[in-house]
Image (cartoon, rainbow, N blue to C red; front, side, top):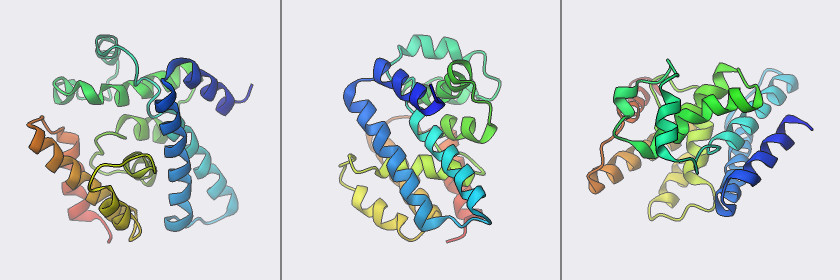
Length: 199
């Protein structure tokens, strides 16, 4: 069984049906974003990047249905995670845990894919193109229907950085409205894009 088929089989067994459909839409959206916004030096480079996008998109919510207590316990062994920064934000634990599952269950060790999984809910300082693709695709896939999603989709037509910045600003505003703690990763991601992003 190929890796993609193996991942899909695992997802079907472990995710709710709607979550699995969301995952497939994120994958399609991320692959579509490549066509409009990323240039490659060769067809081989494009094929390699598409594979990374596909794997990261499929795995981004692999641990979404896992009990938070199990996720937190699992994260204790990941030196890549600033635990103090996420301890009060259990809704994003699945993202950081996904990187561990990707390695343990599917043998994925590519650091770019693992980082795209970790930061798909928060963003981070110095986001790679792969990070941005998964973050943005998760935010604007066709099943999303919150009031500002059309604005973010429109921003994304102007470039990946424009789309990500709009999504990050929406996320910060939304969390403030709810009185929920904003991840330092998200604040850092927004500042970094404003300081260094090309728009």
